[in-house]
Length: 466
Image 1 (cartoon, rainbow, N blue to C red):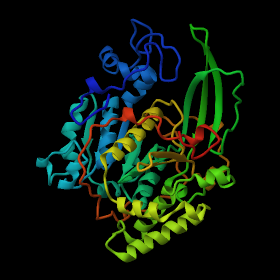
Image 2: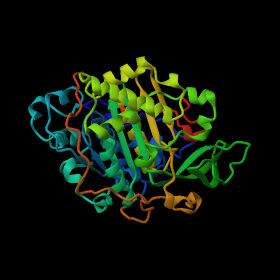
Image 3: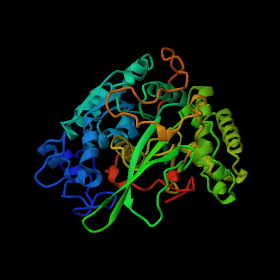
């Protein structure tokens, strides 16, 4: 069921799979994932009933983890609005929103928690009452502006299980990413430009479990990629006679400041077919980040020097990525530049839904997370994931098989960041132009977004399309 702006928790919980089957295809002891007549530890009977359809998808244990999670969301523009909706409906414990910008008339076109009477109010404060209505069990609160946040050190991030920042320039994102890393907290960045969008994930160090029917080929405990290793393999017998294999894996990540300058994986650059399939959105996004660093604003298409500068940067990034010259053609470059700064609600719904799905999986320690850049081209309906990884120097000897999973409680016993932080007191200049929109909102939900992005880390074909 799609979740619109007037939906509530009672009618928007994700549709469950067939009775008795969980999202991984294995049997459940009962409809809600636990034996009949019992209540999952930490979940009340009311909560089991309320989140029943979700528990069918990801299980009672994952729902309990989600129920305890505190999420920090920075910016409540179109993508942030979708994320706030999805995570509130999922039943997290607390959602803290950082957004002190004033509501404008343009915001009403893509941010369905806002109304005309909210114009002039702080965006987060204006939206919170309507977000809260979705699920009264979630504590939704505002906590100042981006400028306030950039004066805080890493201790501010420690209570949160996940930090999400949307629609900011890469200097701002890197500053927040660094602080979250120092607190050993997962970090996501996301943004949209018209039909185009991206998600970046830095989970620092993360363990997750994949359940699947056991095959004839045994799963080896070994490193699978530069970033991922199999930690353990166990199995269980189902009443149907099937044997389910439970594979625990560990994944390490790098921060945005490194990922944004990392080359494509060798398996891509050494394969002509894979290299030719790389989306031109990747060099264009990197060019946009660089342009904002230099000009402290988005490109203005009314200024010829901006067009020339962005074109030059896009060509430069194409060459740096070792992509064929014809990857970036004039038609795509023109389309991307015309979309810069626009907020299109269907794109926001897709990107926000995919990010929310990944956050829920990470909180529940299940399924392969994004590693580490997901790019979406809504014009061609093309979604790809690229592992753009550079190992921080101090982690060169890191062995993911020897590290514990990052805690989901408020402890700090995960990995500490090895990247020196920029000054938190003198954060990067925030883009004053903002993002514009004139498009009406549509009724979209996270349930329509699952499975569109290819997950290159699951196989041996980075950038693969589903």
